[in-house]
Amino acid sequence: MISILRGNGVRLGLVPRSGRTSATRVSPPTPRSSAMCPPQPPNDVGPSGTKFVCGVIRSCEAESVAESWTAMQAESASPSTSSPGTRPVWWALGAFAACVAMTWTAGALLQTWRFVPGLVLTELLFFATPAYVALTRNRQPGAAPDPCFRPPRSGRDVLWTAGLAVVVTMVAVAKGVAVRQSLGLPLPTQLLSWPLVLALAVPAPLAEELLFRPVLQRAFATLWRPGTALLATAMLFGLVHGSFARFPETFLLGLFSGVVFLKTGNYWLCVLFHALANVLGPALWPVAAQQPVLFHPLIGLALTAAVLALAWHWRPPDTRLRIWRAHLRWALFGRNESPPNPVGGRAPLVVFWAGTALMTTLVAFVTVAEVQHVRAVKQRTPGGPQVRQRDEWRLETNAVIVVRSRVEFEQWPATRASWTFALGYPDAKVTRVEVAGEPVETRVAGAGTFELVWPEPLPPPGTVEVYWEMPVTMLEAPERGFQIRLQALVPVNAFALRLALSPGCGYVFERAPDRREDTVFSTSGNWPARRIFGTCGLGLRRATPAEVAP
Image (tube, rainbow, N blue to C red; front, side):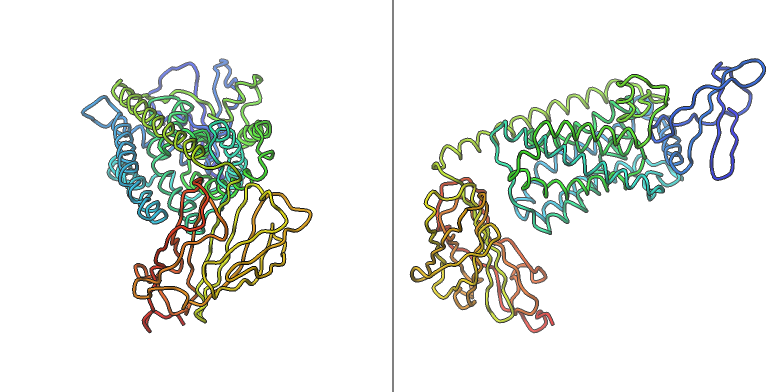
């Protein structure tokens, strides 16, 4: 190989095609990665007409891939008790197996205990920890830092990653809407709480991408072509989420996160893609539930074409490619050539496919049980529109609880002349009422009972928001954490209550004094409509002088 290092960090490599060896030391071949520039046409060099290939690689994009290739070659050459080069694959499979076993058992228990803290612990303990162990065990002594963990060097790659994440998330939601409608599953209608959004935006992408990109996808690339390794990783990413009802969207997000890794070789850009998808996706689901026409399958097909166009234009292929299938393959997988030194042995492949078959069987059982449960609940639920209520209580500094009760209707009540609702506390007073965001008037109909007159014309089915307040003295049993009555304004199919504490209100949560808000009560929904959900404690106590915020 003749290697010339030019200014500005551009390397020109001339490689003879004749395959003749030379006495001089040959540098490692250019890494087979789509992060490299498109291949240049062959040039005739020299009077003898010997053909050479001239490859131009921008160092800011290919240096990390070259170092990754060198590290992979060193790992493949290291001695192993099994076939040569299989050590990274075995550690990757072991890390993934540990992740699945712990996530589906201990992780499920943690999230049942406290969903958001349990989710964070699951990501850190059962995704990030096995991935870190696999990376450290595969690292050679004295090796240079892994180039995939360097900050992105190109602002263009950051912008393309963000744009691709937005469009891919819209396609994923469209696919998810189609699957849920075909299975008869309800669409999510509520926005996520801020703690859950933060958990999905920070620890989840950091931990999951650490396992699926530098560990799994890189290890599979020593077995198969990049496209096959990418599809295998995306399949595992979809299965680990535990439901075929979500598989189309999770598979799609895992696939294009892997595309980002193929094109850039950068872990942080994959984290950015994953974080944007986790934040934007839950925000789009309520829109899809209210305006399903915006996520029609035909619109999903158009968005899919936009995704492929974005992936293609990110790094366009050689202009000599004229076949559309070649262009599509380039957009997703780059060159898609076999690894330079594929590892041998059938044992890793047998373990991979056996584990995948076992996961598929378990996920199928879970999905069937989920669908049967939803259908059984619908059969038990009396006919009529579904109604859900979400209460947000805020304890202010003047010992007054300010409440917003949000009643969500799938269909307005048939009797539209008036609507009567009742508060569960006699000294509670209504401050204002809004129907679909527009204020309406109410009048007292009895002790704690109020009547609302529907506006004309009625807006599309939506929400009624009742703002009311009451003193803390209305609560019972302060020594037991302040007992409250879980009573909805009207018969509802689901009820949830969330409490927030204003700074300096003089109260703290007994179990977590540093927490400022907490979900006190929540039902899964789709049950027969009722108004009374029993009683429970807010879990409060009076704050000590040291705990009172200034």
